[in-house]
Amino acid sequence: MTEHKWIVPRTALGAVLIAIAPAAFASDAVASSAHAPGENCGHMGCKDTLYIWGSDKARIHNDFLAVIDFDQHSPTYGHVLSTVDVGTTGNEAHHCGLSADKNILACGGLLSVLKGQQEVFFLDVSDARHPVFIGGSDPPQSSITDDFVGLAGGGFLVTMMGSASGGPGGRVAEYDKNLNLVGEWPTTLPADGKFNPHGISLRPDLNLMVTADFINPASTLNAVPGDVELRHSIRVWNLASRTIVRTIDIPDAVGTMDVKLIPGDPWAARSPPACSTGSSTPSTPRPGPTPSRSTARTSSRTWRPTWRAA
Image 1: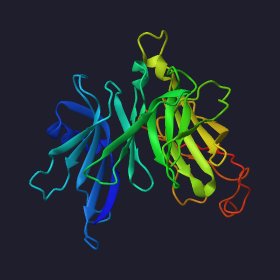
Image 2 (image 1 turned 180 degrees about the vertical axis):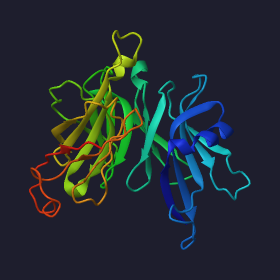
Image 3 (image 1 turned 30 degrees about the vertical axis):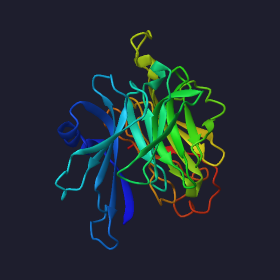
Image 4 (image 1 turned 60 degrees about the vertical axis):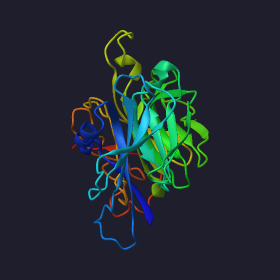
């Protein structure tokens, strides 16, 4: 049997979650499968196991990963097969992501910092229906765990929206293939004091990473005076050196929540930051000062992104 796993969009989860886990809530999930070689299951493959990263509604029992039978032909379709306890509660279960080899699931606690506990959780999912909790991590310079990207050689890059106390000055935390924390980037924060990364996207073939600043998390707390501080910028990175080389300001955005680069595009063109307003506006991080499309492939790779209105 061959193992395959996919991230499942949150919008596809609502009905399943309500039907099978009314006492829990979650913000992300992963589906996995085992199927016979050559079995025809369409372009998405054969999905038969669903993971839900969730919390006890009453916040009494520890947060957990639920393992769901997702095989539509199974008599126990939609049933919870087991749960894996991560040792703490009140983390506000948020996103999760798979490693490049699909064997490690990383999950984040959005509000773990409020209880002074670990914020990043790792589970071994190499045996799809029998995940094992490996352990947690608490990056010392950052908090408010958001999105995960698996790295080709193993490990993850993780957007941490806030500083160690949840304010301005977030980081991108990096874990190696052994799940050791190896860095929190950038080492020097942008001078504008508004680095709060949420979305993240990579183009290793172009030595390019982009992150989207969304919100100052601390400003959402009732105990913090003043208005909520939404961000409106995209950071362009030299992926190899883990340094920010350019900031793209988007004045009309109401919280730049996400940013995605187009795979295979020679310009890495028109990455759309999806804003909290539901709109998107394309930007073009591209090599060189302003190359034509015919010269974009060969021009110097000094990143000079240009903002273009939709």
